[in-house]
Length: 390
Image (cartoon, rainbow, N blue to C red):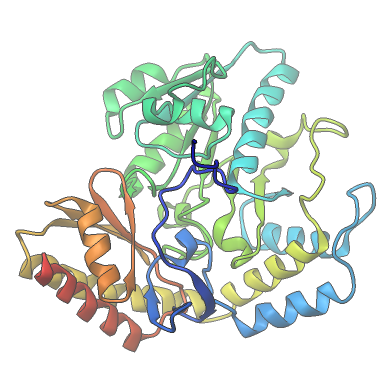
């Protein structure tokens, strides 16, 4: 007799760990072991686990109102939108439950913009190694054969370009292109930052051709690089930006931010979401933004990132047979391995240290932005022991 199909759809290769509690940079397993967490739920728990201010905000809002339809005004949603507009380039925001949902809206917004312009522009340029989510539209945008296999026919209108190939980009980006969609720092693709001069050049090309620039800051945004958003380092602004993960500090929340021009075609009835912008999520999101924009917070992220990078560079130099290079920006760092990256993930796990693999044989290090200097030192010690074990 065949074994029963699991009650949870088996789409993950899960580690046999069961975390029951979290506090700051630490997760406590069911057997009592304390793991130092350098994953943050893959850049989600940006302020660590069970941050007291977020717990208090969530509790207060939960006792007042959880959900109300977007048929009505939602004060918590308006407050979060006002904060994001005040602290970014954007004129407007739409709230979703995830980065994938934000990506879907970005695709719709681009297409509706050009439809209303009366100009037949449909092609969106994307890049090899990209990750924009797992919906059918998002996997079509990424163009990854691995993610797309078996899910066709895919949404048309995307052209995937090689990462870092300037000649191909210049040849492809002309007056027929609707938009360019790119991550300032690729996360799933192997912690690959787009050089500042390249992002500036891309903005210039979009200006010259009229194409909209869509930045996916789902993983690299919300303070992860030491600025509120990664594109700020290059001194440029997008037309549309995807935000999620860290914006909710662990509570499901995503957003699309846009200029008035890019959003002009999205009128009543063109998009919606049952749960997007609910009072619970937006109350937490607003508190996250407030904390991250407090004087000194992002400076502390950059300071700790410098400490971590210096230690990791020494680690790479000490174990040349294990590590090839260090990549990344801020507290979004990656160790490119010479041996299989999952071997290092497992070795670190044996040292009660949590990391996460990425493409290109990279191990991602995405600690909470609130990690302490002592915890960084402890993480480096445990990574050194893990490398020695290999």
